[in-house]
Length: 232
Image (cartoon, rainbow, N blue to C red):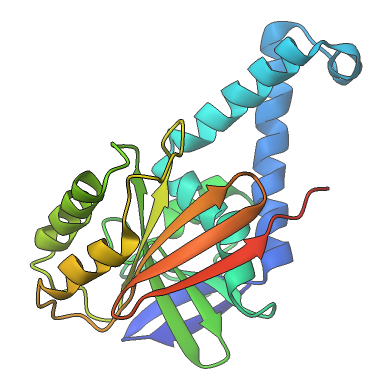
């Protein structure tokens, strides 16, 4: 854990393994609490049928997805880190005025309590002296060109179409995930016509048939990157 200064603010940065350890500790505690509530042991899970395993996995996933701050940490750790340098640090802005000289972070609760709220930046990838500021949004609407563009436009309008160097990263979280009615090239063209006052990128991420994690860049240029999903 290290502290750096960025744009006159203090940020707290972690190596990936360090932050993963904090995240996993919290999830293990939640698993223990869930098992206790259901009267189960770990051995019960090993012998359980697929329906019970799926039920437990779904409950744990729902717990994380309902917590915006945990979603941001999860996204930084597991959804987008492989698109950046292996040595990239994962960082967060600290609350203004917080004395960080003796700050101890041993849990997600500690981290969330220390991180600045209502910031345009949800997390940062620090690669050497380069800072990639990320704002994360989730999209659960209709997968059509028009609907998705209108969603992006509404988010940009919220900030007066001025997001500076912040990169807007949108995660598709629709149940079926059928992208046949989404024309990303057309959406990119429509975004360019908005005359944005931003230097950051607009990106959309999704899982492609459980084989690839895909990030499409829609602004300022069009590009696509696919990374094979590592199945353990």
